[in-house]
Image (cartoon, rainbow, N blue to C red; front, side, top):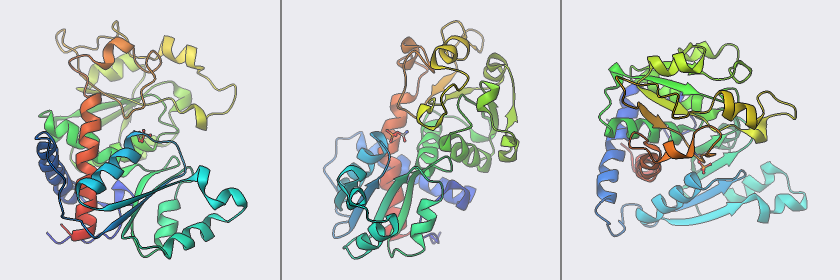
Length: 307
Ligand code: CP
């Protein structure tokens, strides 16, 4: 199939078939990574700029690593050391970067829509690494790859997405991706963190959390995004962990067995989830990180070289 997208701005731009192509390529890279390989030369001579205006460990490092494993030259750029701090506008900063040698640019920014905005005047492939509360498409792809590798059949899959859905770009991208592959979605958490109208993403809102968990086979927990909440917000972190955090007693079981647990990271142990559950057998959280590296290799290669 010929790949028709220059950029990856959101999972909403991809068809189910295109998602499956990226998952297949990501799966091959995940297998390849298990063999402790030496780096490839597929993208040698190409340049990647990593432009992060918000904190990141997984996404930033895995894009850098993915580019290098494919033979790319990678330049990292962060807000702290940029001339934005000397009064330069965001647009002029980006226009300056346009004069550099690059082929692809990965961007994370607190404002929704920034990747789309810069794609209109930059000549590079633009990849959205998280824009405000809007989308985080490579997170959704890595989550889908993790489920696929765990043997989950997307057409018989119900995922309960739990927690701070109001502020979560991860919840948006994941639910769009799941729907395109035929899965069912349940949203749950504190009612103050479930936005009105979330059903447009074709998920069902179910309270309380225990009931949402009971109906799902995957429990996908979200980080509480304190940086996007106002002071005095309900629930406080203490209230959240007490009333909504995943604990041993919420065993949410299929005949006594734990359901699969996922979380995009970074995990706040003891808040969204009891520390003991992070490394539980049914937790896919570390595998999500490994799939992140593989899927970002797949995305870079597909955008630059085609499908
Ligand atoms: N899940 C995620 O985007 O993690 P980082 O913020 O560490 O990149």
